[in-house]
Image (cartoon, rainbow, N blue to C red):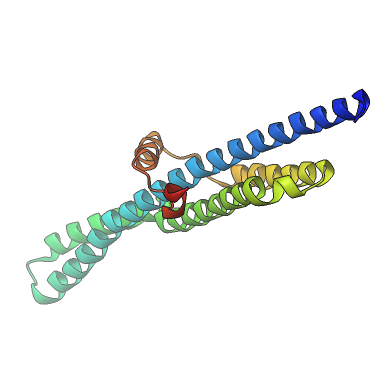
Length: 178
């Protein structure tokens, strides 16, 4: 191998390591983003239940009170007002939609994470530099598009996601064996 071929080979090896490092960054970023979105899913589900269940129960109690007791109209009215207030907050917050959106975002980030890991561990050494670069560009575009769709997670969700990851929520048994 002459010096020109050696320099080209060294340049390709450096570039391949750089692509591998970038795939690791995307994988890690997607892992944290997925966990944050799963925490947001839990949070919005709790908000939906916290507001929805009392609103429904109070509406039922108000209706029953109004029908059963003629003197309970004031109580029924107050319960109905509280129930409608909770319903209004629930509608404004739109917790059900936010739950669905956060779960979809979390799963999209998991897909990106899996693709980055597979590219890095399975495909990268078999691709030409052009193929590796194209795959990296496509994956980066997917991640960037998902970032524009996902809501920014709360600080609490970020802290919980970070704690989850520290305890190994995304470790696979096969990885412990290798």
